[in-house]
Length: 447
Ligand code: NDP
Image 1 (cartoon, rainbow, N blue to C red):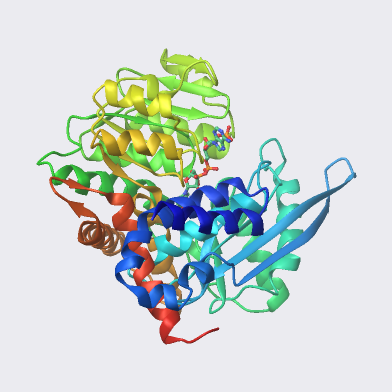
Image 2 (cartoon, rainbow, N blue to C red):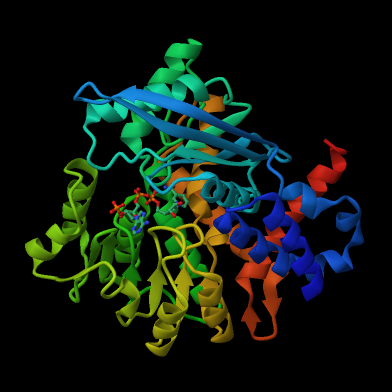
């Protein structure tokens, strides 16, 4: 088995050099589904692993724009159209200085499995640019978004590829992108999700990823007769996912004690309550300031990045919600030593493979991103449905569907990942996500 994984990975590395995050994401999936493939030879015969790891299409393009001082800037844009076996490509756009082909391919690959788990008809894709909106004026962000869409518009569409937000792409950016798409196509369609409420957006979409990660934690805890109520929770990040993770933890009676950004993290022993969260939302979404200001305002502890991490704080449940590979082996060991019983990943692949191993060995309830943060794309799928119906569902209706989908994802993880006295959610999510896509690909022939 080990040899088969090794030789498959050798090919992946040779074919996709210098894409280490993509290798990491593929390795995790291949390791957990290889035993399943051995028992079901039809997938090997159909060359399913080889096909599913090859994007259907990759678009890379120049994004020129003029900054406020009149200087020409050039960024690189991408869209990875990974798999459309069960629906139009669907997945976010990331604007961040670290963005490269390997990172977007890892995200697009994960998205295929995640979208399949949601039970909704969505294929997988991802895109973005090495443009970083941090420190840019609204005018510069608009100019960039318009230039980005001036190329992207010819590759996407409501029945082809429907992008959404991710790191650095929130309501403001989706607005500018949508405006330019509409202008170029002369069409008002549901081509993006995460839209404003007044022009086709869905209630609960901004909240969905964070809420979903907490609902998923609640489902995992339930298997041990426990719940979020009364639990101390550490959260990393302070963007979209982190903010609504804290909101839902509060609503369910837990206590969130940390938030971070790339400069450092705050530790508020008393808990980040609704009022303090309002301050964070204003700070991050409107003033676009740094989390350090929270520590000043509420007399909380602040640690610069690199000195200490949210994972050094004692907690019952951890919600990594910033970025990939932010939980290392030593962090995982500290979490386990301090009695952390559950990890629900709001971010995509935030734990390194070595950290995941520590969680698995310690039998921590570990929900990998593709299952735990699927609530975001699920509500994006619901936004697509509402756009097609030209109807808007109530907050309660969307929230109920989000909860039902979370339960369905958890059930799939149990179905494929249940072991004696333990659930392997990595295996459950990977096999569960794979089967639906692979069966659809077999039924559709060699395309
Ligand atoms: P935001 O841009 O709203 O927030 C990102 C947060 O993470 C910020 O606090 C940011 O700090 C921090 N961060 C980003 N990159 C780094 C880094 N390299 N090192 C340290 N901190 C970093 O993004 P989201 O909240 O939307 O996304 C967070 C995670 O959740 C990502 O992994 C994303 O892929 C995942 N996700 C998001 C979904 C969504 O619906 N938005 C859906 C599913 C998953 P700073 O401002 O200093 O950069």
